[in-house]
Image (cartoon, rainbow, N blue to C red):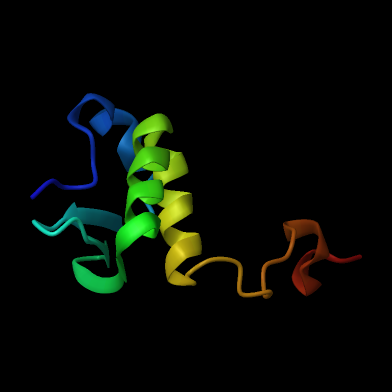
Length: 89
């Protein structure tokens, strides 16, 4: 089994960490974990594509990819700080 955080990027990982990791199972399945709990399982071509994208990108790219795959990404309630009611004048 492999984990989702490359050791060479561990210093940069803290700043971009969204709490996602992954592990590869014997059969080729990939389990995506969010804060240690199973969030999604990828099988077949999806698992292969995911592993290729994670290996080609940075830690931050991998975190964003896992967030999108699990649905834990942009729920529509994000705003720019300047548009927040307490910052309007």
